[in-house]
Length: 288
View 1: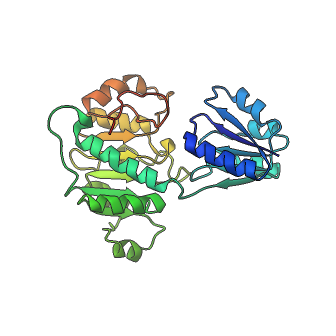
View 2: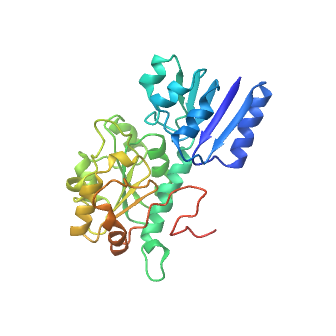
View 3: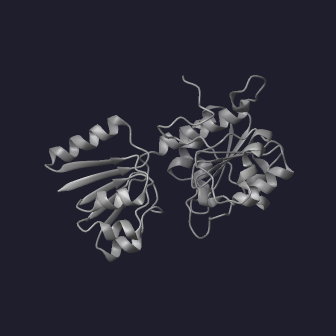
């Protein structure tokens, strides 16, 4: 039995070593495909494997069609949006994910981004503190709760909006629950997004919503690119130079207005996407 680990953005060596130890102890063979550049490379790699582990790599109908022996695919992360579930079902392939496994890492990243923006992207000069600021958490799941916990430790006032979590539960954890999502945007200095990408949320973070934020407001997106209406957000930030947006997700290259986005980011102190890859990205985070 062959197990393929296919990752355009490779796991850390320690993680790969751990996976290898488990797979080989079970008597199976581990195959690695890292930093691949074309779908064709993935098609060739899946041709004779029985199981596959991916990160955010796209397991499309074409990938499934090329994987004649595939029985199970596991997404190392939350959500299934990168897996073609219909194709998996049609071919009797079990699709699985690992919700909660990277929640703490994402929560730390979200707080790190807030600090990065509050400190003027670490440029020389004055910055601001997070203590006493209001952070609004949109979706109070595994990551959202951890962001709330860490934000409180920094002295922030924590708000959260999640129609699927009882108000009493959030309030019992010291969270301010607004009557509406719009109320949270109106009152919070920072908004931390943790919503999935689905028919209800895609492009829902738009000009009308973000435009409600107070002066200097900042949106932190460690969720999904698809939830952002990039065209409207760029238009809004052209009108309101005080607003900021920080994400670890590359923007949509096909967006017609993004050719002017780099100058817009500089003007609004918004960094290029802080992509967590093994390739250096400018501006780099400082070494600690």
